[in-house]
Image (cartoon, rainbow, N blue to C red; front, side):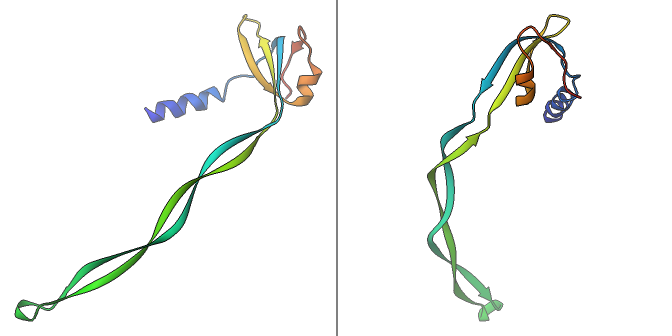
Length: 121
């Protein structure tokens, strides 16, 4: 199933560029977004004991072995990430299908509604 999904994504990326009539324009400005990220950090130690055996038969002995390991805690920390600006054109191709096309700021400014859109090569 994962192979099929990967193949679909691969083939979708190979689609021919869309050309047609610009029917709409959409600009999303750059913005910041607040979110909570998880931060893992050491927060103490934990001690436990195991038994180590040696010898055989009646000479068999045991001793306790002490182990110490670091405990880790997870906390949620507020953080900010930058969402870059996006420029999109809505293009109706020659078959009448509508497509959202991600474009550069230059392309966005270059085309107006009802212009013929041809992708840059």
